Every structure is written in C-alpha cells, then in structure tokens.
Amino acid sequence: MTGTAPQVITIQPTRGQAQAVRRQLRVAAYCRVSTDDEEQLTSYEAQQAYYTDKIMGNREWTMAGIFADGGLTGTSARKRPEFMKMIRQCKNRKIDIILTKSISRFARNTVDCLNYIRILKEQGIAVIFEKENINTLETDSEILITMMGAFAQAESESISANVRWGKRQAMREGKAAFQYKKLYAFERGEDGNPKVIPAQAEVVRRIYEQFLTGASLRMIKDALESEGVLNAAGEKEWTITAIRGILTSEKYCGDVLLQKTFRSDCISRKTIRNTGQLPMYLVRNHHEAIVDRRTYDAAQAEMARRKAAKSPSRKCAPTGLTSYASKYALSERLVCGECGTLYRRCTWARKGEKRIVWRCVSRLDYGTKYCHDSPTLDEAPLKQAILDAVNSVMSDKDELVQRIASVMERELIPLPGESMSLADIERRLQVLDQQTQELVMHAAQEGDAQKYAPQLKSIMDEAAKLKEKRVFLEEQCRSNAAAAHRIEDAASAMECGQAEKIEWDETLIRQLVDTVKVVSANKIVVYLRGGIEIEQDILMPKQLN
Image (cartoon, rainbow, N blue to C red; front, top):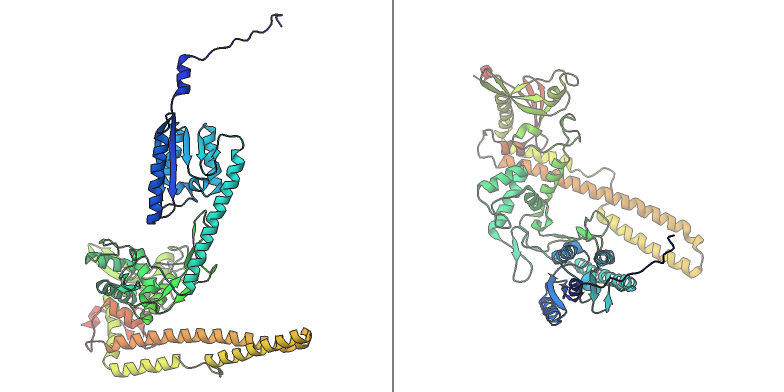
C-alpha cells in the first residue's frame, strides 16, 4: 500500500461511439410455409409483404433481407436453404435482429430451435417471435422457448401421425398413389388410374423376354441404348437400377404392393425399408397389366437364382457369391464331372495364334490340389458335341414333347399319404375355431376353465398340426407350379424349333440345355431342361472330317 487513496476517472464516450449507438439496426425476417398449396403460397407472399412494410416503416431499422422457405419441412433446419443462409449472414455479423411470426415457423424441432437461438444469442443477435411476444435476449426467454418449441414439435408429431394414419387407412382400402414421372410405360388415365403407354409397354415385354432367355442387366442396358430407346425421363441413357426396377416391380403384372418403406419419425425423416416391421398391403389386379403374372413370377425366380448363385472359387470371390455371366451360354452350365466346379472360358495365345478353351475353375485357381484329372476342352469340338446331342432329339420333336410331358407328370405327382386338400384343411380349421369359441363361452358361463382345459388343448394341438400341413402343402404347390412352368417352357422351345437341325445360338442353348457335365476329354453328358439326359462323344477336328 502506498498510502495514497485510489482515484476513479470516468472516461466519457467519444463522438464516434455515440454515432455507433445511434446507427440503424440491421433487421432481417424469416418466413416459411410447409406445403406448395395455392393457399399456403398466398400466405407466403403475404408474410414477405408484411415484413417488408414493417422493417422499412421503422426509422431505426434497415432492411437486412427477407429469408423465405416455401414448401419445406420445419422439422429439419438443414433442409431449409434460406434459413441456413440467414444463419451464415448472422455469423458474418450482417444482421442484428431477426423477426419471425412464431416459434413453429422458425423450427418445429426443439433441439434445432434452441441450438440456433443459443448460437445467435452468443453473438448478441435477437430473435423476436411476434405471436408469443418473446425476445431471445431477455433473461427468461429460453424457458418460454423450450416450452413453446416442445409444443411446436408435439404439434408436428401429431400432424405427422394423422397423415400416417390417413395414408395407411387408404392402403387398407386399396388406394395407391403413383409417381408417374419415374414409372416407365404408365401414365395417369382419365379415370385417375394407371394407363399403359403401348410403345413403352413393348419395351417392357422385350426386357422381360431378354432377361428370361439369359441376358444380363448390362446386356439389356447396352441393347436399349444402342437402339436409342428413351427411358422414363425421356433420356437415352439407361441405368441397371432402372432395368432391375422394371423386372422386380409388381406394377407391371397389374398389382400394387403398398407400404414397402416407411418413415421412422417426423424429425429425422429417415426412410426405412419395410422388412416386417409394419404390415404391407398387396392389391391384386389393380390396373391393366403389361406382362402376365406367370412371366412376372418367372422373372422373380430367375432374379433370385442369379442373386443366390455361388462362386466356383473362394479365391476370386471371398464372399462366396458370384456375379451372373450371360455372355456365353456355357458359363453357368459346363461343370466338371470330377469335382463339380464350373468351367471357365479361356483364351490361349501362342506364336500369334489364339485358341479358345474351357477349363475347370478349381484347376485354374488351385492346380491339382482339389481336382486332379479334369480335361481342358477346345471350344469348337465342345459346341459341336452339344449341338449333336440337341439335334439327336430334335429329329423327333413329337416324341420329345411326350417325354417332357411324362417328366412333368412325375414331378407333379401328389404327395403319398396326403388325404386332405387345402380346402379340406380350411374347412376343418373353421370347425375347430367354432368349437373353441363354444368351449370358451361355456367356461365363462360356468366359471370353471379347468374343466374344459383338456378339450381346448386337444383342439389347439389339432389346429397347430393342420396349420403346419397347410404351410407344407402350399409350399409344395408353389414348387410344383415352378416345375411345371420350367418343363412347359422347355417343351415350348422344342416345339417352336423351325428346323430339324439347329445351329449354335447362345439364347436357344440357354433355353434348351440345363447342364453339361464333362466326363472326360472325349465324352460329355448333356442334360436338357425337362430331365432329358444325352451322353455324347466329343469328336476332334480330324474325326469330324
């Protein structure tokens, strides 16, 4: 201590500082409407006009901009570009005050609302909510904003729940909404239902036909683009996703499957694929079909078969799955008789000469570790041997069709020991259900559930066994239908042959040949679709002459 009393000196504000205090406040306004309805857009324009007049009519304020989002959600700030632009302007200290109609207009997400208000408050920027009469720079504002924000979010959740209920009720009644901009070969008809576009419908049928005759999605894409066929958006470039969508959408066989996806909540708005969390609604024969149901089902079976195909080599495909190869018909049909692995087409080059051969994939990847004696086959003699096998039965197509029919009959023989049909099971289940209701009624009237417990258990056990049998029979019917479809296709391909002797054609071979097993360097076994088995010799070029 020096012994001298402290002296306080007051420094008066300078003229420049006084002018800074008196400068006009930069005021911005934020307005939003949640839909694109005409009535809402009128409100949107009215808000803009209102805030322009209010800001420009105050001599202490100057316009810092009107930020307006139209037809956008209030539950996520990041999905509102004008809102985010306003926040950036605030961070750059170009705004002093923000005017907005209400908390629900500013944000319906409580977390978002408080987060941005705190960011602005740290920079001394006030947000004034006119409806609630709240200024965020006041001390008690955050408590009020928290409560009001929660109410706004709850209101949004309530509206979302009502909308979801309405949509699901419409689904239960079979009402479907279509996105025609993305739906190929359909347009909105005069009655409001989908109407087929004939030219595009032909393209859809061709896509299904090419896919079922073995073409890959890539091959279909290339063919469409080379011919200049326009997609749903009127562009020449197709995507594999669009082609897969045409092949897997139930709309092309006249059905509509509703609620394939759903939103988790109205805040995150994340779309989730429905894999059993919620019921789905299938509306059969909703509109005119482009392909028949049998063709559509065949395409789904073929899609599943390709997707589930196993790779012949873990070395090349660690996941165990393989991609579908359709360039060569034998890529998925030629198998090694020793180890069961598929063969692969290889090109050998020696002294400027190329030689096309087929080799066991196991031999290619692992040498003789797992497969010891599989032969390497030249392509030309192999193809000729397969053609000779096919032509040997094509000479008498009538007999072949009869053989295929007999195979069909064997495949479709009813299960031995099954005396009840599906209709019988349904009738019996109805009787058991009626008996259950009567027993429950008696037990309730007498107040003695134990008395009827053994009878109820017996009925429930019988019903459980019948339901298991029903599932088994339904699965058997589906398998039989698939077998019949496969065999009928093979017979149809045989009957449609134009000549007694066919030439090599990749598409026709895919339709006729199921598998070719390599027995040795000079012998193969050709298995035709429908169960016809032909043993055939491979003749070398000298033998062919």
